Length: 232
Image (tube, rainbow, N blue to C red; front, side):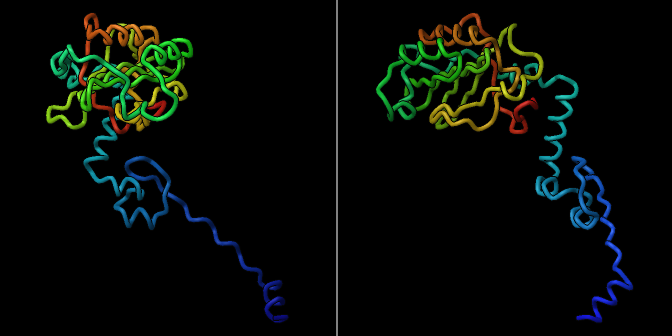
């Protein structure tokens, strides 16, 4: 032991220099050269994504940089339709039973009054198990959507769009989460382009209660899985 201590004092070990990292060839994250060799230059997350998803992510980033992501896509315009195309207009809207079954008894009038006063929250309506009308509010903005249901073969998802919809990035902390039409649980944020002033979203929602969807363009809507708060 003493001999080892003497040797360490006489011949101190030099610290091992840190290994220089290199950027992932796709996302730019800094990784160890050994990992780069294992994954053909990619970091582990990019390698797991595979070429198809990496290309989709890059297209998403390019759309943000160019600004095109803040405007309706060609697919959304091609998918535009009126909710009455898939909905029996004689069927009244009611609070989604699977969402409001638990808790204190409530009504659509009560929920709408509370949402109007607070300016934050959501209301989920259903005509049956397959059709839903939803309004979600936050930070002075709102999103109004129609979903034909997850059990339909011809599933239709639409969002209300007009001249007042956002054409720039919604701030990260103000971007509205897209709640599931059945359970209300948020999964991913709504696209910035789906946001409009809260009073506009409420007005569209109120008209929809009477199955009046006129004066609004209802665009096809398939949320982008690469959208995150403050990014899309």
